[in-house]
Image 1 (cartoon, helix red, strand yellow):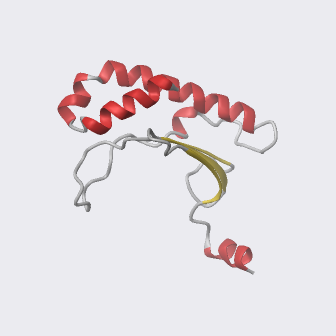
Image 2: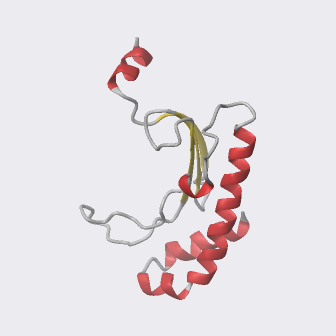
Length: 126
């Protein structure tokens, strides 16, 4: 985890395409660690929470590239890793667990529903 946080701290200071491309090998090592963590979460969560049998860690990790099309902030990369383990295997509408890894005491774990269908939202609010 220390290597992951150190990489994200360095990325936060040097959030440019040039820096990132110069550190692709380091990113590949860090990404493998995040994938291993996602697999461990899948294994542990599946002991008490029904998950798709074919859930793959790569499908649970959010991309590091930011969508800057409509943002004033044009920094190209996120300075966190997000892992979502969802009951449906998709990123919205089903119960899920989320792990957010970010330097500076900004990491957290969450659980719940993200963007549920309106029928489900009505049931929750009733």
